[in-house]
Image 1 (spheres, rainbow, N blue to C red):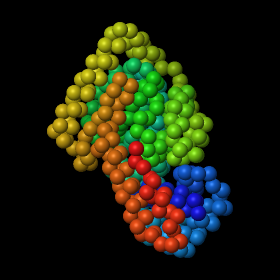
Image 2 (cartoon, rainbow, N blue to C red):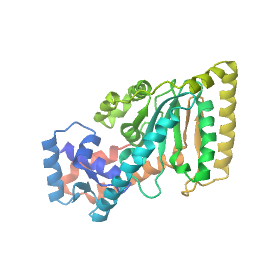
Image 3 (cartoon, rainbow, N blue to C red):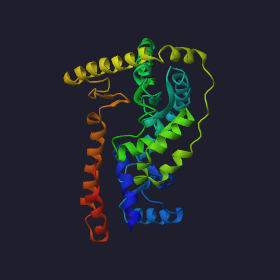
Length: 318
């Protein structure tokens, strides 16, 4: 019955986001490799026993058809926005020192609502992350004039020298496996290889290493700007921008400032990374996930499902 534990883990995680999942998605996000027929039989049995519910072509822990309707609308909206986000990603790749770029967040999972942002995961040249980030965020200030700032959420930066994600948990593994690369095939392959730990959560993660990304053409302006700072001046400027950004974001955290969506603003900074403070979102999701695991364990505390309990108690948030 190990397959049931794997199925439930997927449904619990996406249940945090009120997102029912299809059979093919369940198979993709399972923590073990299972044949299609075996999965179908397990899903059918769980539905018959009313431990999970089938909402059209989707599965959920909650018997609410509105969840499926919300998802269908969100998928349709995402298809339109993905085309726009891909174009923006190709444009952002033209900025100095950008070596790889991918769509992340809810859009990378083929979902968008009326308030969805366009989130981007960006990889820069080693030791030039802060020059690249500063230039890109100076540009973003102009997008406020047309109220398009939500289309340029450049949230997560790594440079080529440190591509391994430090927070290793189901949240970061899910973000990695769902990234949609736009530009920079070589560095994107390197990113996926550097985070092989994600296969502990998703064996299908290996397929991320085979993803195809079209190479970008030559950009003379980009090369000229990069040459200007490829020296000791560039080293000093990158370090200075890191210090400046760190001080400013620490002040925002102390003041407990909120963004437009009402969430705490926070940033973790380092020489080779710039990323949202996990305390303000990532850990919140992991806590909700753990709570739902515990809730499901209590709900299913029946003789036929006694074997599931150790699974829930062993689920760790790193």
